Length: 174
Image 1 (cartoon, rainbow, N blue to C red):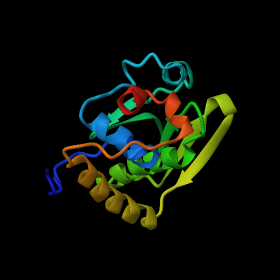
Image 2: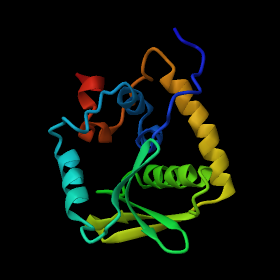
Image 3: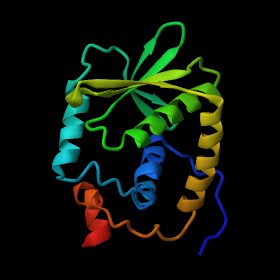
């Protein structure tokens, strides 16, 4: 078994999101087992449709930056990152994903200190401010993520009711 942490592992925004939802899912995703793209899961399909049909007027959509992709950005006196999510069930994880994107931009000298999380189906948005404490937490979390991803085997499965709606369900329960 590999017990060393590979500091060259590039953490993505999706990994950071999954770190807060399910570390097993994060590990599987990091091994290119991207079930979100091939799953027939209705929740996954709804989420993809939401991304494709909402905020069509935004000109800066699906922005790829470093090893992440933002749903859209607005440029004023600073960059404001916007993320779209189907449901607020994992709102804390979504907010951390957004803060991770802000952190990435700031690390490259891009003026960004806030973002907006959109939940169109709930007609709700959440303004997200970035603090220095957030930067410290992200740095610590990245080390923990790299530690998990350096392992030869995924973390143990979680026993939660919401797992039945996960695109990775078969990897854990079948």
